[in-house]
Each structure stands twice: as structure tokens, then as C-alpha cells.
Length: 217
Figure 1 (spheres, one colour):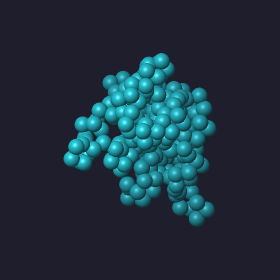
Figure 2 (cartoon, rainbow, N blue to C red; figure 1 turned 30 degrees about the vertical axis):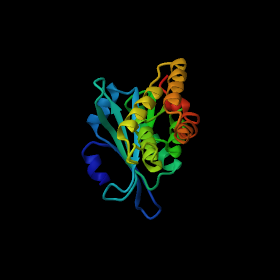
Figure 3 (cartoon, helix red, strand yellow; figure 1 turned 90 degrees about the horizontal axis):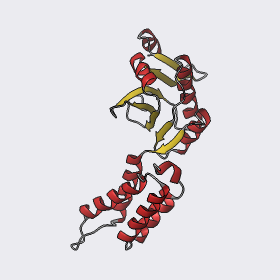
Figure 4 (cartoon, one colour; figure 1 turned 30 degrees about the horizontal axis):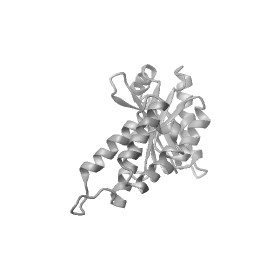
């Protein structure tokens, strides 16, 4: 596979075990690299697990165009989802960027994967880190469903109330300033004051520990 990628003019990096087995594989298509040279300010990283033929973690690194369309920059098959694995993959990305004279990204968006976040801090220390809003919202919605937070008069799931809460929470995370953030958070607490467990959850799990990475202000 490595040979085939190299023959197709992909940028390829790989790591092998002492047995000769490939444990890590990094590759990027030339067209993807070309797009990356134009749209380099923001990149997104996400790792999927057991979703490919090799049953290996696959780290996807994605860019965003000026029309808010996404494109794949590169992929990396990893032996595990540890900090060392992510650091290796990001160093390979750094090597590619140096070769193509691409500066470090200004913003890197991830899910709440500590090993990946630590690797980013190591390889791209000047980049601002943000948590992916979709991942945060999805985690909160899963919690809401699990705890059966919003129920109607019949004791059934109140989808409209769930949507109302998620819209309000999104408004908090999209606050353009710290002042507006405080105002919107206060309004959220007032509107949903009967749901103390949920309010405690979003503050202790997301807003307080990850304020700088959750809030766009």
C-alpha cells in the first residue's frame, strides 16, 4: 500500500514495528496539499475507531474553504489513540507543511480527546484550540436523553423543550464577548432554573474546565 501511494505521488510517511509490520501510516493527496496551501488558517481533527478494513484508529485532518466547504487534508492510520501516536501523526503533518512552506494553523478544532489536544500543544503550540461545537452539543443531548431531563405532561420526551435548551446553549457558546457570554449564561440559568442537574452538568463538565475552548469570544 505504501508503494502504491508513493507511485501515485502521495506524500507518505510510515512507521514500522521491529517485525516489519506497518503500525502507523500517514498520507496526503497532492490536490489536498494544494488546497491546504490556500486555506490554512483553520483545521479540524477527529479520530474514528474500527470504521475501516484495518480496524485501526483513523485520524482525519480536514480544512475549510472560504465558502465553508470542508476538504480532507490528510489521513493517518494509527496503532492506538495515545498521545505518542497523535504526536507522530502531527509531526508528519508538520514535515509536509515545512516542505510545502505552509505556516502553522491559527486554529485547531477537535473533540474532547485529551491525548490529541496534548499532541497539538506539543507540535503546534501557537495555535488556538477549540472544541467542536457538534461534539459538545451531541454529548449534552445524549446526557439530556439519558437523564430524561425534559418530559411533557404525559411523561414522554419533550423534543421541543430539548431543542429550546440546545438553541440557548449554542447561543452561550457563540457569544462574541465575555460580557454577552455572562448575560446569555444568566438567561439560560433563569429559563431552565428547574433543571439544576443539567445546569450543573454543563458548567462542571464543559463550560468551567473548557471555557477557552468552548466559547468563541
